[in-house]
Each structure stands twice: as structure tokens, then as C-alpha cells.
Length: 430
Image 1 (tube, helix red, strand yellow):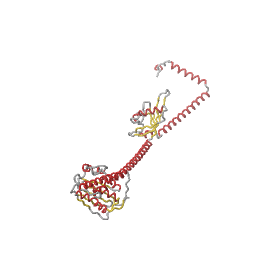
Image 2: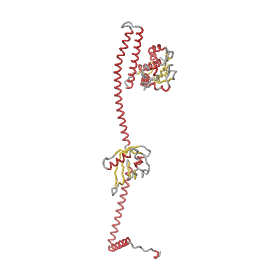
Image 3: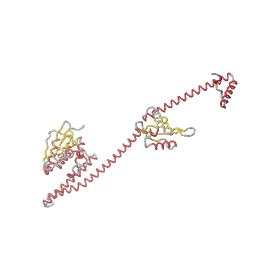
Image 4: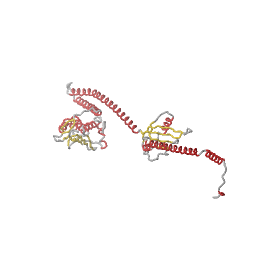
């Protein structure tokens, strides 16, 4: 390039200052001797080495700090004033289920804080900044939408002019602690509810025991005096009066039966029923039913048949409770079987179980009511049973069967009769 092609240098104040500094530097270098110049150069070189060493130490310290933050088993976030996530440590992202750097630049309030907690979280962060609180509990939403609980502390960072630069969030996962606290609360509530239920059951049992005694005493007196009059011990009794006395005694027995059902149910509910299981002869148990049910069967003109079982067949059961169940089943069969109908009771067994079958040709039960009949106070055919009970017999019978490790089931067809099966173990359950 020729001298003619070089553009002339424009002489500006800035160029003038640069030329002046170069001249000053030249004069200073000329003033210094060779030794002093070498010393200056050596000093500059040493300073450069120290500065590089310090810079390296700072970089290493920052790397260790970043590594420590990333490994810290907590969530550490830097949030900009407008709510963007500037930084999130590796452990924190893992806790929230995020990979790589997918949290960076995401909006903190809509990405991590669940709906309904944003306003309270903003308020609490402000309270931490003002020193009103030192930390708070906050739920955060993970990447898959689950909610985890954290104990959160924050710190505000400001620039030289006092403007908010970022909010640093430090959050420790306390989900397991919260779950343990919730479980402890549920356990305490369950224990309290159980204690209250036990107290209520005891009060109910005590009340029913008192009521039973208070009702049984006059009812027994009514029955006793009616029987004395019926026997003629108080003087001659006319046929009409005799029929009235029999009605009185039937009503007295009916009321006693209701009271006994309520008391038995209350005892079952509160666990106050004791069992005395033993090897129970099946044939003897069925034979006892004959005498107990014969008057009822005869009065309704029903045919009653009892099958014979293996004389050596036994069941492991409480004799009184087994008889109570079978009497209830046969009484129900009589109740719902009309004149001319038929009732049968028999048994069978397999290697582990004895089956008692009670069948009738009575009115039957709708299919959708077969389970309901075992519920307390349920009467399927209320129009037929208005004066027959309170619907506890089958509920009590099933509970007693299950207490003896057995079961009570029913099969029926409306208008074609019913089939009840009581199962009991043949031997003592292990």
C-alpha cells in the first residue's frame, strides 16, 4: 500500500491524549536505568503470577461450592425478581423429578408452587425478608404432579443500588415427617374414636342390662299370675277368660323374646358373648329341636321332617349357641310357611365341615334381599312380620356362627321357599 493510499490521521482530543501518554511513558522509560527497568518487569511478572494463582484459587473454590450445592440433599434455587428460576441444584431437581436443566428459566410460581398456595408463599417469603419468621412449611409440586412438603427458608440478594437481584430458596424435604405426623394423628384419632365407642358401647350395654331387668321382672310377673289364674288357683275361669289369659301369655312370651334378642345383639356388638365350644353330637342337637318346635309346627298344620346323620358325627361348637341358631332358623321357616307346607332339617359333612340344612316351602325371599336379611333390624316381609320381631334373629345367628368359625348362608326363590345352611368346623380350629 503506498503512502498516498493511507488515510490521513484525524487529530482529535482523544488522539492527542494518547500521544501525550506515549510520550510520558517514553520519558519514564528513558529515566529508569536498566536495573530499575528489570525490577519493574520482574515485579509485574510476579504480580501477574500472584493474580493468576488467586484467580485459580477463586475458580477452584467456586467449583467446590457449586459441587457442594449440587450435592446438598435439599432444594436450592435462585429466583429472579420476576419469578424465573435462575438456578436449581442437581439434588433439588432430582427431588422434584426434573432432569438436566429443565427448571432453569421456568416460572417458579406456576411450575413448582401448587395452585392455592402461591399467595401464602409470597407472603411468607416477604415475612422472612422482614425477619418476621425464620422459615415455613410449603408444599411443592413435582414434575409428575405429586405433592411433596418442604421446610423453606429464603434470603434476598440486592445489587449496589439496593434493588432486589434475586431470592435464594433453601428447602428441605419433610414429606416423610409430614406423613408420619398424619399417621400419628390418624392413630390418635382412631384411638380416641375407639375409646369413645367403647365407652358408648359400655353405656349402651349397661342401659340395656338395666332395661332388660326392669322389663323382664314385670313381664315374668304377668306371665306367672296369668298362669296361676289359668290354672284356676284364683277361682273358676270361663272359656272366654281362659282364651284371654292365653293371649296374655303369648304376648308376654313375645315381649320377652324381643328383649332377649336386643340383649343378645347388644352383647355381640360389645364383645360380651362367651363361648364354650366342645365336640357336639350333631344327631343329639337335631333331636332336641323336635321337642322345641313340635307345638309350633302342629298349630300351623305344617309337615316337619328331620333327617338322620351319622351317629358319630360331631361339630366343634358351643351347644347353646348352635341350638339358638337352629331354633331361630326353624322358627323363621315355620313363621313364613303357610298351612300345609313342609319344613325339613338335615345334615351332611366333608373332611373339615359340618353342614346343617333347614329348608321350607314357604313364601321365599327376593334374590336382591338375600344379604339384607342378615343385617340388624331388617325385615323383608314387614306386612307379615309386623308383630313377630325386630329383625335381629338372623343377624345374631350369623354373628354367632362366625364366632364359632362357621358361616350362615341363604338361598331362596320368591314363592318357592328358602334354604338356609349353617356350617361349623368338625374339629377345633388351629
